[in-house]
Length: 389
Image 1 (cartoon, one colour):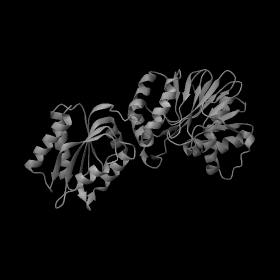
Image 2 (spheres, helix red, strand yellow; image 1 turned 180 degrees about the vertical axis):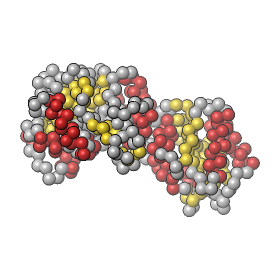
Image 3 (cartoon, one colour; image 1 turned 30 degrees about the horizontal axis):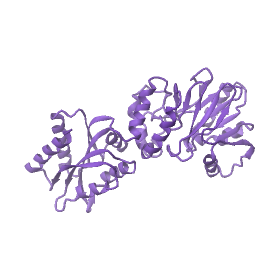
Image 4 (cartoon, helix red, strand yellow; image 1 turned 90 degrees about the vertical axis):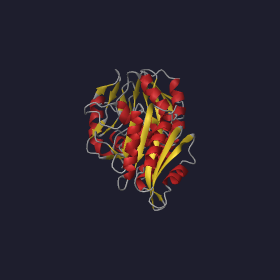
């Protein structure tokens, strides 16, 4: 248990058994499910935790409460890693009231179809509404589609704490060796929240009007130092801006020739003084990290083979991941390979037809099986284009 402020306690849990978060994201450092308690004349608990940690969570709650029964459970997000123990809480503390919005309780019935919670134990709040605990005044700020429709933030005006639901979260448990926040927060953001940049921008505008000294997310560490840094990163990410100058090269290769082309481009870019080249074999490396790099840097090169009159499956998956997350404001270079009918460049370009503000390099490297001298010259020309401006 950790003191966030004089009245706010941390009662979250760490999961080191999880291999894939949300069934797809590799989490080698585990995952934290955060929950908090605000102690006042009336006591409020902020969210629950993942289902298998119910008893450990209740034990922490009881220790913090010291025999007192909580008055409220504030439900900011109904995703099961935060809501799974709501029923456990409601049964353990039968006088407590559950606080959420109308969409919260619509989902409540879906997740707990056999639990009949009386209306007297529900408090439905509206956007901007406040709840007094005594000394502490809580204000609810709706954050729809960040990244579910019922999500809301809670601002404690007294201690100037923003409880930010999944926003400002990151992968990784909290009881392991400290790692760089930004890398795993970026991978988390673009993997899970990235599609909803406009909605994040809207809630950041609300946050600007608040005096925030601490951010308490539902995953990852509590943030209480250098907050402008984190807010600025979220603004860049959610506006699809360029965080770092550099080029991301993502490739797939069947027999090694396309890989050779990608690596030649990497060397050419480095020789030209490119500040950063991030190269990824999409078949072998973490797809979520490749997505993260594509959004981090301002330029992207895609290299793949023609495959069944389409493109190689890992590249298709990668581009789908980008476009469904609103990939935009970038320059893209293309490298294709095909022994008898190369068409990968055409297919890849077509997959971005609905994307905003995408500029394609004029040089398209078109390989027919193995690299030729002409291909090497094309790669050099593509490197020059990617280095321009």
